[in-house]
Image 1 (cartoon, rainbow, N blue to C red):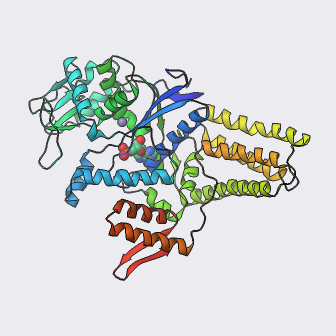
Image 2 (tube, protein in one colour):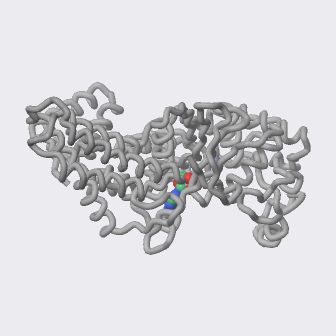
Length: 469
Ligand code: AMP
Ligand code: ZN
C-alpha cells in the first residue's frame, strides 16, 4: 500500500510501526457552527482510508479531535449570551449527526480540547524546561521556533522566507516575542472568556498544542499517520511537529496525508469567504450518500469543484450502482438453481479482475476515482452476466463483491425508501411526548431523522405541521 507523504513529497510504501496496527490522527473541526461540505471532505476521505485498511485486516486506532475552545466559539457564545460550552456541545452533536448521514464511522476516540488542558500545561512546561519555549511578562507562553532544527520540513519552507513574511504580521501586544517567528502556546484570559489555571497565568491554550497532546495521550509519542486538509500543513502541522518532537525527542508522525480543497468557482469553500454550503443544506436536496459518492469520485489530493451538475452526475452514478445491486437481490430471491455451473465458475474468476483493479487503485495512494471506475465495470459485468437463468450461488457472489467494494467506500447501496405518512405522524407523536418529558435530545433526534428523510417539521401555535422537502 502506497501513501503520498507530504513530508517527503513522495509516494511511500506504508509500513506501520507495529505490525497489523495503525495509529492515525485526523485534525477535526472547530465546533462553532454546522460543518460545511469542505469540512466533510477530510472526514469522508480519511474514513475511506480507514475502511480500506480495516478491509485489509489492519486494526486502526483512529483519533479525531473536536476543537471546542477557540475565538470563533467564544464570539458566537457572546452573541447568544451563553457559555462557550453550550455552543461547542451543540455543534458537536450536530456534527455527529452529519457524520452519521455521511456514513463516516465514529473515531475510536473523539477527544475534546477543553478536557485535555492538564496535558497541555504539562507539555508546555516540558518545552519551557527544555528551552524550546518561554513565558513573557504578561503570562503568554511562546514557542521558540528557531530553536527547533527541523522547522519547515513539512511545509518545505525555509525560515528566512518565513521571517520576511512574518515581520509585517507582528501585531500589537506581540512585541514581547523574542522573534517574530515564535508562536503562542498559552495566552492570558480576556474578560468574559473561558480560562484555566496554569503556572504562567489564568488563560487558555493556543490552537496547535491540543493536537500534539491528544495524539500523544491516545496514540503514543510516535504515530503512523497524521492527516487533515492541506490548509493545515502550515502553520498548524508544522507547529505540531515542532512541539511534539521537541517535547518527546521522537519522530512525531511517519506519514502526513493532506486532502486538497473542495472549491466553489475554483475558490476554497470556507466560512469566512461566505461561499459555502453546509452538509445540512445538501441533505435537504440529496441523500448524503450522493455527497459521499461525489467526494470519492475525485482523488483526494486533487482539488474538487462543487457544482450542481457534478452532484447530479454523482446522483445518477450512485443510482446506477444501486439499481444493479437491487436487481441482483431480486434475482437471488427468484433463483431456482442453487448449484454453481462450470461456466459461472469461469465467469466469477473473470469478475475477480474488478477486485484486482479496485485494490490496485486503493493501494496506489487511495485512488478512489479509479476504484469507483472498477465498481462500474463490475456493475456492467453483472448486468450482462447475471439473469433469471443464473444459479443463486453465482448471483450471490457478484452481489457480495459489489456490496463489499461499496462498503469499503462507505457507500450504502440500499436507497432511502420513501417514508409513509403514518410513520411520520407516529414519529411526530413520539417527539411531542419526548418534549413533554423534557427529553429534548430524543426530540431533536427525531426531528433530525425526519429531516434526513426529507421531512421538515414546523412548530406552530396550532401544533406541529410537516411537509416533504
Ligand atoms: P476547520 O474547522 O476549519 O479547522 O476545518 C476542519 C477540517 O476541514 C480541516 O482538516 C480543514 O483542512 C478541512 N477543510 C476546511 N475547509 C476545507 C475545504 N474547502 N476543502 C477541503 N478541506 C477543508
Ligand atoms: Zn490538529
